[in-house]
Image 1: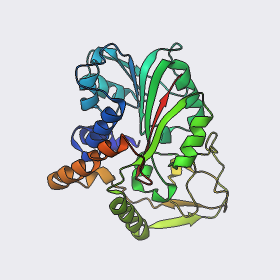
Image 2: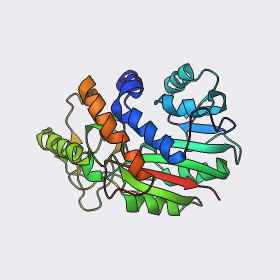
Image 3: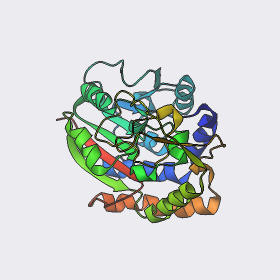
Length: 291
């Protein structure tokens, strides 16, 4: 993520409908109840989200927070002072084999250059019977300014993410799109925003970065790609980038009324996801188990 947005991101993770509803969905699908599961050892990778609701279900002293940025680790420890904070690159995880019962990778995979390598490392450090819960943004055609601010490498499709998981030894227990009820509104907003955004094309060869040629998907022709994550377009040797104007985060568009409405619409999905999979959505969720 761009450094200028870290402070705001920490604040949004405390009270924004998207973060709060996502935590409710995670808790429901994992079957975690407050005050139970206290003996579990949990790894939270990409710890900018304070995860208050989830921390109530798991004892903080059994948490390990990992992030590549020192300030993010300090932020996590501020909310969980009895937990362990580690600054490290998750492409090279500094843990012994079979160390964790649950691993959270919430909207982190899209930030990683070599996502397949990271998942293989997560399998190594996950205990037998342990689980990994990951979420990721869906559909490359929804690529927008939030992807740019967050320095994403890609967005995923369900098929692409399943293919990626199948290359590891994890057993896939559940995979589904979510943020389904708000999907039409958010998709319309993203596409309208793209139409009015100031863009220009660079008609030249852009070398693909190592590790980005995975089946999870790269941005399609015509999708804006951040300068920090330029990839080769297989269909056409051109790259689309945003102009140098200030990019505003989608999270900043929020008020108290919308926060309440969107929170209840989004978090209601947890009752459906327990029994079914949504056919589309703004994001993807995936629950895997090490057998």
